[in-house]
Image: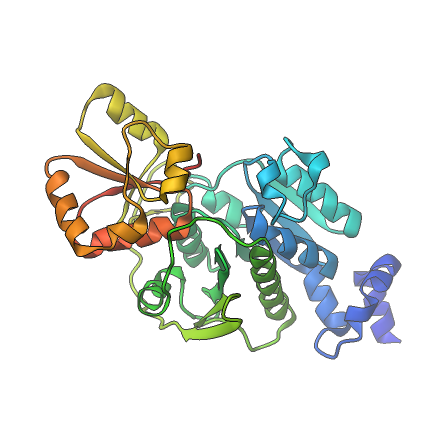
Length: 366
């Protein structure tokens, strides 16, 4: 009887009916469902990874969800971003996703942010939430998420996809590793075939569901999680690999930055540059620029930045090309770009290993 009274204070009749099949699970029950209702989840990115994760977390009874994304829905999104449809083309993703979620679970409070996460706004946006769902495909933003979550002691649920492969992990959880600790694992265990830039539509759906599953386990107190491990899925080989991530406990190399919500910004070995900054350099002729497009030849031929030369990632890896590049870029500012985060990261890693200074364009889309 006491349990029933407690239940009525926390969950209404509609919620009891909506989550009936979930409530009977021994690992969930009323207490677990109340935890879900009290939880606050922030999604960074509202694309393919977020689509399925949003649908299932919203339907599971999460009490508050935040959505951060500045993009509008395009027809090319629909094969993998299943939360949207053709009637939503041209509309903001966060607004459309909010409408979809409210139809599934009207009890969920949804806050939208029609903007990109930056080092200037990350503290203010992330602070109110318990868990951050990393659904972005942007290298720089992922570092912002990692550093901000570590400073604010927020759990970071990571997901990434490429072609027929996907990855997932849980960072900054109970003293476990963070995103930066994953770099050695990627370099030694993951082989990227970067001659194409597409993705099979179901891959982000699968990885997004796994992100949602890990989030539900954390909230409801299920002790086993992916903290300390990177789960890598390969659809061609029909395989899952569980790779260990060591916690380096490295010191955050942060430099205090004024007017940035009192949060320090991050610095990495890669120097990031915006497309606007590139245009200013080229317009003002302040530096000689050597611009490289690391996408494949077909992508380059369809559309590319003015003055960019094409060196696909698979060619960039070759030693003789690296030697030629070192000579060609002497006295020039080397800038690389790609519209895929994994290829960008791989290209930058190759140049770092070869000790070639460079900048990487972030938020790049063609």
